[in-house]
Image (tube, rainbow, N blue to C red):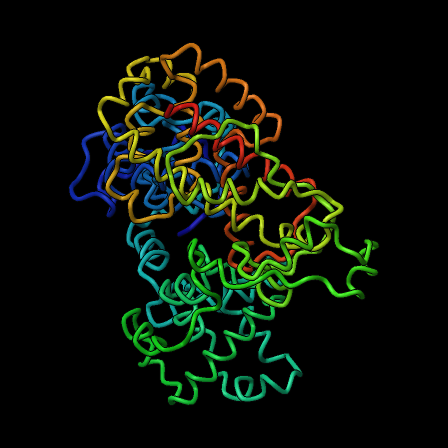
Length: 506
């Protein structure tokens, strides 16, 4: 017989023979240790703790067998272990459990339990909950499409594959008729556009969530690929794995040219026509310096047309005013850009150049940071340069919450060579290292730069991640608008990072 009632956590015993354990445990503490260290593991246990502390309750009942002497928890041992964890301070310290979260969980004293006096009936309940569908008897999990439908019901953002599917199924644009008529399922779209060989190599996105269906380039390329796929038969077997997907679309061109220094220099800047100048409230006659640049037969900095990738709203804004900032990094590409971009003395009276810079600035921020961080990474790998930092100062772990090995690994680890130089880990690592230099003279200068980054709210991993993502997404075309003040802040932030790197290395 089953009864559903509330029971205090103190009355509940953990199941020593839990199916999650490789072998039976001898006591409650060993049960908790096994859950953290083996299955499901520390990361998942801490994630569960975070969820419970946020909500203050459990979503599902515990399944309990009451044999008359004790109440054994057959299902709910992970949750129960978190209620009992505070009884073992050594485990709390070992797994770096948040005391704040733990204290919130301790407020949960009673839990709802389905209590059985027949152990076989209790086992049946546990089995139905954990053994999967069992021909419909057990819980049938949602597939990705079901999850998207539910998210849509709750007003949440749905996955990229459903967004793409819904866009083409609901569009009235005749250009997309062929794809609309041939679309069959969401799973195939997920296989194609979820593969890195497509999202990264074809669209230059950092992840598959970056597809922007308000971006004409993205929609056009998606339509081109789906049309090609369905013309080849549209069989899921053609894209069953990444290798097949990559082979099928190998001849499809990328959404834009590679963003390398050489690829940027393609032709002269196109002057604004009279209509554009009038619309922007500017003079129709270019000044002498502007005429000189525009009439140059082979200008070195190109115009990014508004019809290409970044359709950013043009506004008057002064950028690249870095001439006297003391940036000295031994990188030829970086020196070239610093010389070219800072030599024009750009101001809001220069209509053509201002428009060009507003559309293209994030591209150059990315390139210059890539160059500078690459040099810094090579520089810090040299043992003689590593001695310029107080790595062994124990305060670095207390102050920054990162060990010296973790910070150093961001630049010396083998995995770092497989990812972009411009990423959150490296930028944050540079900030941390700038604070533990041995040279007092450098520390004074660096402190001034880092203080300014604090004022710009670019001083932690979360804000730096947003900075990196926005620059990358603008470069890749998935962000098409940027606030003036934010662009100006990012211009200054890029300069500050170049100054910090330059001061640290020289």
